[in-house]
Image (cartoon, rainbow, N blue to C red):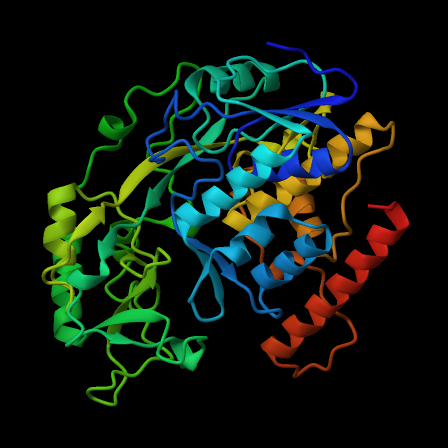
Length: 455
């Protein structure tokens, strides 16, 4: 493998973070070699070899300015994020969220990367950590050989949790005599409702929960095969932000009714009343022929998924084009290993990005790749790496992964709880007003940081 020179950056991984890192470094003048092992070497979750292929969901989160993901999105746009621009071009109706057509999004990113003269794409597996200037963004499904190399490099066992994917069904198989279109609190762009909602009364909800809890699950060891030698197996460790629906249901009879099946902000037009619970389906492709079950990540066997999910009113004849699955997600003990600039503490010219560092959510992954790419270019120029202040969403995420207590460390999504409190707000300020003020301060500090650091 060609070694990185002072003006060459090696990026490992053609996912969200890797593509953004490569793009940012190239637009700052670096020659980039981007490695993606697919389609030659596949993962349990991916279905093809395209760059920036989304697997767990098709939503990048809320685009509203007073939401954490919306704030992070605005910060990324200030830095010229390629993937946010591609996501907006591939956007689907999703209320206040930025949901995308997966195929179109991947195509747009792939086209941009392949047409960038400063980037050379190589479809090959990296089995050793490259020398020279490098960004590793191999993702939560890092190959066994590279995982073993990372374990040897860090001197720490890689931590991991089990993550889950939600099923997708065809739109035509949903019974719209029962289901109805609506967005929570009428927050939509289409005017007809961006989500399909399947309502349940209390009796049907309780029967559904009973069957869900008793359904057969896929043993994790059968799905994953043998755990990589030297890597600690935490078979019972689920990431709280992406729990399988059956695990969530086991926490209490109403856990789903107050979770992904909460009916707040919705009324069944046929009854004029709010259902006891509701299953929402979100558009998954531009043709509106496919819909994914929001919040219904699962590890049930495929036959059991079809049996139990067809108990949902309106889904009695649902046609499944993708079943829910689980896969092992790997991430580093970042508080011990990484600076807030995403540089490895034992080797400053080695940077990490993406879910591997402990950021959760598509936007968080892209944002970390964006910062890693900028810092790689700065390192090549002889300048020091930078990180936005902790009052910004990107800065707060980077501060979290580099400085939190390891014993409580879990992958973290953008959230306002990461930002310092505002001291000058009146005591009775509403949550929405408080969040709007936090976002306003964040953007002001972000723009000031960009000017001061010449980013």
